[in-house]
Length: 506
Ligand SMILES: Cc1cc2nc3c(=O)[nH]c(=O)nc-3n(C[C@H](O)[C@H](O)[C@H](O)COP(=O)(O)OP(=O)(O)OC[C@H]3O[C@@H](n4cnc5c(N)ncnc54)[C@H](O)[C@@H]3O)c2cc1C
Image 1: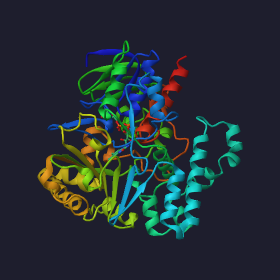
Image 2 (image 1 turned 60 degrees about the horizontal axis):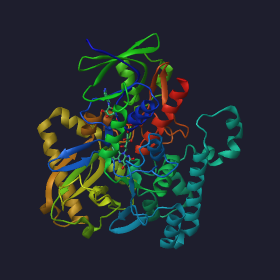
Image 3 (image 1 turned 90 degrees about the horizontal axis):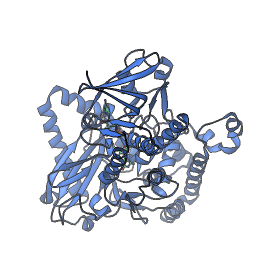
Image 4 (image 1 turned 135 degrees about the horizontal axis):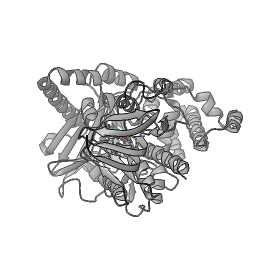
């Protein structure tokens, strides 16, 4: 262990929260070092090559790109707004929910969505109005929440935040039950539930409200694709004096002395010192790297290992086909075999039964026509669903050959399902393919149990004033589990933390 490198702020991990906090601090003149295990920055938002095609590992569409949103705010503060333009997905239906063959388009605009739902399901108009009112009220109250809550806020809370107080522990399913909505209406309203990977009976109503209203106010895709967004942030850090994003340096230890981090060390044999340390890694993984007793017990007890489900991702590069002829376009498609979302989630997530799966399908080459993802005239299709981490991980550990065989079986099955539901003859057009399982995500971005959105987004884990965490005097945690998931959520948490740190260093 020889090399020593000093900086002001050291960020462990280059996921979107890590890059946001680092870029903001670097822009403000701090000497920032980002230390990333992978050979590519971005965490779940990283891009990889497959033959002549490129795929963003996990991100498909984002919110927060209009003025007032976290992504817009970050880029504006870094003078990068013009370099990273966004395209809005089709406002008349940025998500299409297809249930047993029936297609419903989810439009931008909360009132437009409400009016469309009422027109489609007039018998349930009264309940639908209640649903849209309540979810809208929750979102309005969430938008008014102050960054830090003082005694005056607590005293005024019953008047200012009645819905948050009343519904803090509610699930979406509880609201559906109260409003006696029909199975089909429930499926349409919860049709984007893969964005939080929980069925109505388990997801926090507050989280659902945040998500659907955020996408409802504009769903976007970066004109030059996700790698351009990530690369631009990395360049903005590297361009600052004394700042660097260091790839292929896995952190394998955090030295703590007297409740302060002194340095971190890497598997490549470097010891890196800084004044302040920010972990973009999973909170419990960070605690483990610091070693037993280094971080106060009362802090550790507040962390959870109840993670969100891991995903299955199928990446397809396609030639001689135009997916627009098969119901795809500047939108995503959510496909469900029937209306019982709770049953589907249990079958897939608990029993690893993917015989009749839900599918999310996204077509990046139809979201922006900028070159860079596929050879001329070719297209990409990304398909996602979820599965049991335990099953796939055990198989991979026990018998890698069987694991590979099962992956192939699953790939073939998913292709059968897509051919039957959407694209007959799809196989004839496949140029390249790859399939990732929950352990794949664990391997590439060190996400425990291959979790997709940090801790499970149930009411017990969703705290409306959820903050980046301070574990020690000079150690902060910011990522999907410490803060909020999604690109806009993690960027928002990263910006918020950077502002706090900049105030503190004045
Ligand atoms: C299937 C799927 C689909 C999704 N779709 C969308 C979408 O369409 N839109 C959206 O907004 N969000 C989406 N998300 C969620 C979103 O991608 C994540 O919430 C967000 O990107 C997480 O960012 P993060 O900052 O928490 O860090 P992560 O992305 O988790 O990155 C953490 C980084 O830390 C690094 N790291 C970990 N351990 C170490 C170590 N020991 N040493 C050095 N580096 C380390 C990792 O390599 C990684 O780069 C999706 C997620 C999944 C799984």
